[in-house]
Image 1 (cartoon, rainbow, N blue to C red):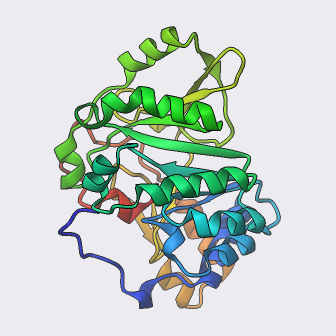
Image 2: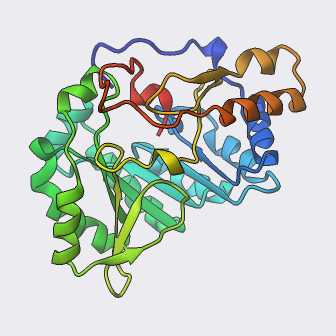
Length: 295
C-alpha cells in the first residue's frame, strides 16, 4: 500500500457475510460459475474460511479461488482448503527479503514462503504465483523465481504493471512480448491452457511439468474477451479496471430490494460494460488504486 494511503472504508459500510453470500448467489443464478475472494487482502477478514464455505456451497458454482499476499497462509491455508477453496493466487514480486520489505514496507517474506509451503501441503488443485514485471526492480530475479516455482509445482504468472494510482505509475510499465518469445525458445515451451477462465495466456514445458502465464493488459489487451467484474468491500460493482463505470449495490441490499430487482440492475450494468480501458491513451485517469478494486 502507498505509505500515504488512509482511505480505508469504514466498517459500517463493509458488506456483511450474509450480504456477500446473497450477492454471490444472485450472480451464480445469473450464470456466473467462478468466484474469487480477493482484496486488498482477504485473509485479514475474520472468519474468511466461514465465508468461503458458505459461498462454496452455492449450487451452480464450479470454482472458488482466493487471491492473497500470502502472509496468513500458514494459519489459514488448511482451513480454506477444507472450506472448498480449490485454487490460490499469491502475489510475490521478489524472493529477496530486502527488496520485499522495500516494496511492501513489511518484513514478512519468510511468513509468505512458509505459508506457500503449508498451502502446497494442503492439497490445492492449483497455486499460481503472480509476479508483476518491473524490469528495473526484479528482472534479475526471473531465473530464481522460475526455479522456485518449478521445484514446487507452482504456476508462475508474469503481469504487466498497470498505471492505477500514482505509486503504480511511478514504476512505469514494460511490455512482456519480447520476454515471452525469449522464454518460449529458451525452455522449448508450447501453448497451454490452465483452468481459471481469466485473461492469462499460458506456455508449458513439453512434459507439462512447468507452466508460465502472461497477463498483458498494456501490450496486448484482452478487453474484448473480458469476463470479469469486481465487487468492493462496500458493495461497489466495478465493471472495468480501466474505467470508472460502477454500480452501488449497498443501497439495494440494505434498502429492501428483492433478489430479482438486484439481478435486473446487475444484468443491465454488465450489458453496459466498457469496451476497453484507457491506460495508454489516458494513464492518469484512474484515481483508485488496485488494492481498492481487487485483483
